[in-house]
Image 1 (tube, rainbow, N blue to C red):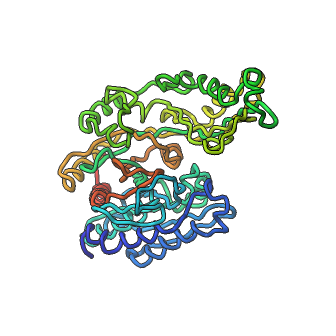
Image 2: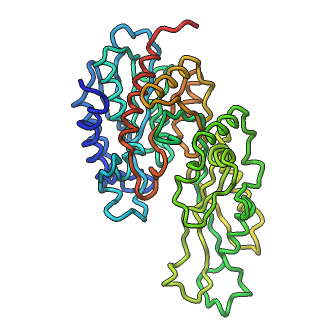
Image 3: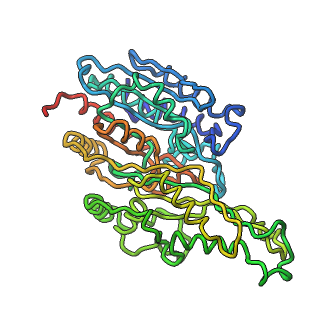
Length: 469
């Protein structure tokens, strides 16, 4: 059946190359996704590939609920002799972020390019590789005669839109998924490409649009300035209610939680291992510095502290088209990252109340949030799992595993954590330094991904072994 690296090179990379060409943007970014057919094309590509590389006894279904994105559901029975092991659930997604500008010369979101062991293009790392890696893992175990439990593989197509279709799909599949003992999520990050990284937490998120209106139409700025307040200035005032424009620290206590001591200690260890790579992986302009000098504080900033970003704007003409006009209004797209345990819906309502209360000078202020996701905080890792993860990392990377929270959001994890409170979790992924998910020049580090696949195989083999206690 060949080694995992060989299978990656011969079977997975060609499929991922074809997948990258498909502009399968998530429904939030493609309102005509059903008509355009790109998500269906991505699911069909993955399903056809899985059928060609099927494991004995495997079943595959593309679940299509009315009005919802499709979901690829694969069941693989336990290997002979491992039928008593608790079931495993493996998660990934096929929908993608939009194009984004700024791709380097010769690269593009839908143009797969191989350079120095990296496969460039949108979605390869986030998260197209997951379904292929999951099948490769189980094929390797069968080929090597190692055990694995019954596995359910769930590959959704709405993750980048907050997984809004996923609860209905999970409800429809509930009996077939069962109660997993182990959940493996392949949509997270890694601090470097030198060892296996386990994700201990994910931040939550509130996305919405703040709109400030001061006039019914634009007027001459020379005539109106000093009489009519400028809408962007009012928007700045409102944002000051949320965070400190000097430090970036979120002010309101409603968006903070105490950081567990264990996570503080893990941040310190991660900072010691990663050093300046914590901020060096970002493409700062010359002279720009990170928000804090202490490296462990930077880790906590991006994993356990709320942070506000303005990710888009409307009502602001490009400089070349900007006349001497006091504009009627400004709209800003806001992204508020939340500490892992904080309830997303509650935070969204609180943010709306704060921004809309007592508008300056009577301006018309509205905040509409469309996505409010709760983060995820991993349960304590069982000794067998911690040992298996560490041994796998040493075996395939030559270094022990590391643990760290991630700043992004995977709504599926919070759903599963609530639904299966007794499950163990291995949340990991390939989104390491400079891989730039959601941005230009996204790439998949192929040698790392192949080793990660081998590590997951080792963990699944360990999970299928009988354990006392």
